[in-house]
Image 1 (cartoon, one colour):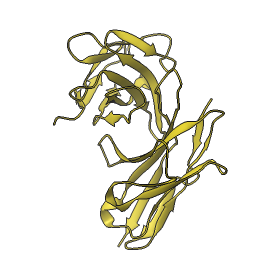
Image 2 (cartoon, each protein chain N blue to C red; image 1 turned 45 degrees about the vertical axis):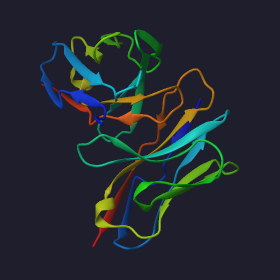
Image 3 (cartoon, each protein chain N blue to C red; image 1 turned 90 degrees about the horizontal axis):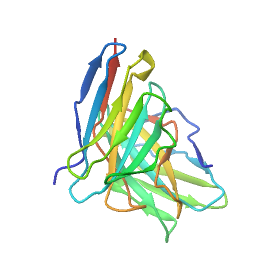
Image 4 (cartoon, each protein chain N blue to C red; image 1 turned 30 degrees about the horizontal axis):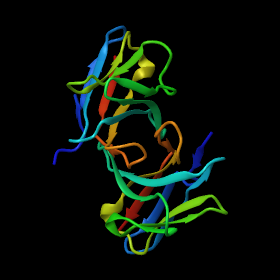
Length: 115
Length: 113
């Protein structure tokens, strides 16, 4: 079975500062990895995905993430945040080559950007 | 390019009533997934469907919940005899093929009185 751990439930940061949101996963098989963002009362928007290839993945809105297989991590980073980045961020995995395409989500990290 | 459409956005039911949640996938998408988000929790997978077939229902409660994705029309998540614990946000997602990224709708927020 797969699981996803987001260690930080909330990350406060000042505007224009860098930020890292941590994500670790557990799986006995190869996985695909995703980061989604959820703004209040909205659905989830895909930020970026790792399917294969380069371990450094660039996404929308200036975010990037690095897949580290040995540490089973997929941390999300942004060099300079804006007020508009305030939202809930979810890390998720799905099984590569499995019978189902379901996503397993972490519990989310609330990024609170302060002026 | 319409995204995933869910309706209604908000649904209020009394205990014991039935709730029907609808999801129209993105154009060209034939894979539909339902997830539930309980307060203060992340999203939990419920069911994965392709046209007219349930592929994975491992996350569906054994009783009162059912899902379908008919050949024509939207996917329906049906909850019979709702209870207070069913209050949650229910999200639908779709993809155009297996193992492609899923695109989410804005959800249906179900409140049980």
